[in-house]
Image (tube, rainbow, N blue to C red; front, side, top):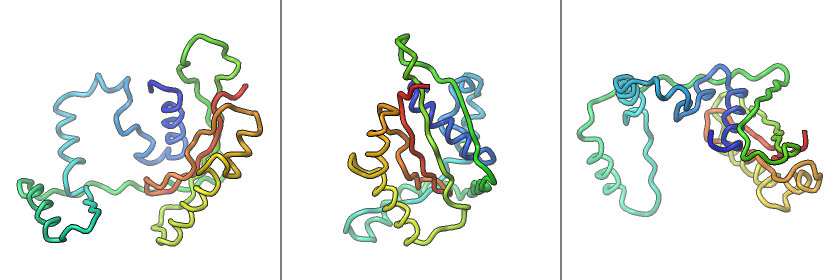
Length: 188
């Protein structure tokens, strides 16, 4: 919330995922944090930040036995836990959704080019994608926006409508993939 880019990101997530936990800021909304109690925080932490909800990733060619030993040493003192609920898929929208929000400005300078404009698509209905589908979406996102010379990136910058491309393209970190692109410092 300290930058307009972060504020825009949170607003976009809220609009794309109105029916799921993804509409919330994972760190908590700054205005609500002072109302949290230590007891609530501990209870929430124990429920959601238990190894039963985690995944372990390894990289490299070290011996598998050594990896498992490291994980075992980490988990040995934990009680068996209940996995918390899986986040539901956001139903796809039947029609476009528009959202406008005022965000904190960087300074008191000229307000004529202080608008962010973006378009985001919820790409997948929630079913697991195949490795080929995930790779194809990632490749397409990279081809469209991955470099300054990428066609969508180049077209947006050459349009003169804004000063900087925002949105990041494909986000495959959530259950459902999102594609976002837009411009910062657009004249309203």
